[in-house]
Image (cartoon, rainbow, N blue to C red; front, side, top):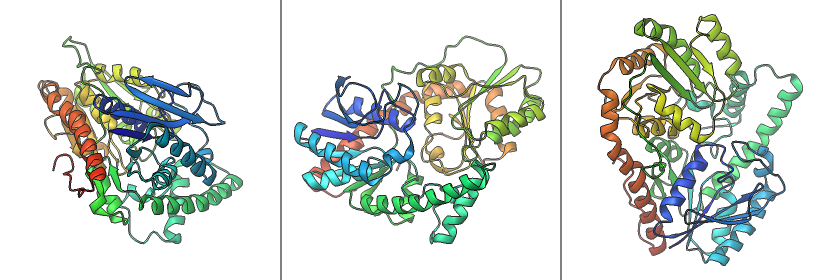
Length: 436
């Protein structure tokens, strides 16, 4: 099978988990199929073959250095890019005689679906966040699904809530620009949803995410939940058995209200009291609009000697931190689409404490590989203390590694291949979601 994967970012330009997931899927699929990745060129070789994956990068005027950086959002979210990317994808479909196309991010969605319809090949779209529904999505901090009736008044309230949480100090001129941009984003997401409806299948990264999209009109018969893949089992190593003094808590992710790192900070005084006199240290890896507020709270609570803000780290550095940590905390307030950080930590043999929001509960076995709690300081503190004081939980995570490697490795590839095969043969898409 000749499979074309499209994404607006791809290694070495990988700003987040979506790009790593695309890379890992491409590498696994390439063991048995021809895989071609089609992506804009931000400053690498226009044609490359690596780990069995062919990478075709089409010309793009904006260049990036390697690492976790983004081009301005407006460069990719516009009709010109949609049309241009469609033409480039059509060229690659014909060049490589691709049998199927699979879009792996939101900005490449329109161009990929248009190219598929122009060339007559089936097309799959992976949904990795909720930005095809709404640019802001503040309602997902409060509701279990995206609410019905997202009219203009509700949308305006969503933008107001976003500004209050993420941009509280901007002036009137910038606030006006945000509202103007919100009008454009409303039109853009409407276009993307319409194009998404023309795809042959949509893939969400969790069952919870599938429920949210189906609640907003996506066809349930053509919408499947398939988890994100992890790299080959030998890429991540379990922690060594060597003893170390004190406890290490890790948070990795954006420092934003939706991700909930402020809840972990509020939980730290109770955690420190519970584990005393053992030394405690906390690493917060990430950047975001909540950083200044969190540093102020850390100082106010007298935690400056415990907490380190280390910024956004490269992927391989973060993997080492997972191994060194005693527990990784993912305290998301919003409906987390998947929760890649929790899975990465488990694959390194480290127990996790996650919130009950979104797809996180589909990764963690409550009481076996970690704990699932309400996103509030006290439940988070209680669960973290249980992990730190447990003599068996890390061993239980190690025992679960074979199952995790299957569920988020070979099973993911099998489900994708079966999906592609069914589309090519015209069979119904009655695949079971992971865990069902």
